[in-house]
Length: 264
Ligand code: CO8
Image (cartoon, rainbow, N blue to C red; front, side, top):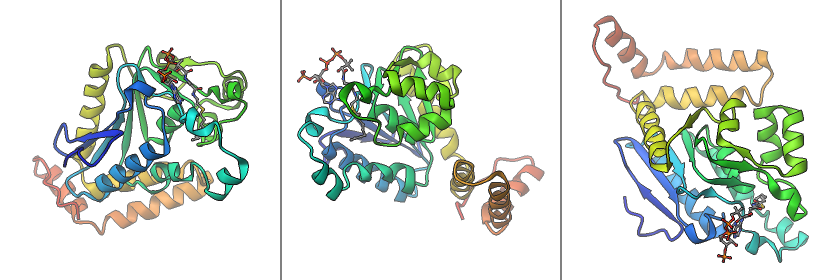
């Protein structure tokens, strides 16, 4: 695949099975304009449909993952235009429709919509010096791409309330301590990206069927009661006995060899 069709992102396959998307508006600190999001959604859809891809990584550069929604694009927006065009609704594509795992590799700024984009991903890896925050209050608005909901689920009400009401930033190190990030890397953007790609490669090495099911059941925990969630999990677990890969995986274990998945 080539990046030629895109203006605001780069795409590549750094390891077998890994689809990498690099946000690429460095002069605007990767501010998330509508044209950028259109390309991001297009690339995500293609990776999700591509049988060769097992996991996706989204990153920025050393200075910024993304410094937010594009403030210059939003400044003249009116209520009626925002409402009738359902402004930022397309952002939900990542959270609602992408079925393969998506890892955010965050170095530098992840502010406002950038923080929300990271929170929409399934796993966040970051550098210790990354800068997260929901500064919308300083602009006279509130988070609009899920930040008030996802950050609150991640850190609890009191801390989310404090962060969103003050607009204060938090570091990558804090993101790790609070469970927002799964891994905090001490090195630079390249070291971080290496770690994220290695994890994506691990995931891409498993049965696609099992991986999609694993993501689905964990996500259900955010939506359902515990009892409903456990029942949902059990049904999907039952369902996997209908896959070829369940037979392949368990037979390979018994024969002490590596399974060769068919993704069926
Ligand atoms: N939108 C548009 N342009 C931006 C943004 C942004 N969010 N962030 C930075 N830029 C631009 C700057 O305007 C500047 O452009 P230019 O060179 O043309 O003047 C360029 O990027 C470089 O930025 P700075 O010179 O400011 O770089 P510094 O290193 O001095 O500062 C900061 C870095 C601290 C990150 C600073 O740029 C900043 O505060 N940025 C804005 C952060 C912010 O408020 N983000 C939240 C935006 S609101 C939001 O995301 C709402 C989400 C709501 C839901 C989603 C709706 C779409």
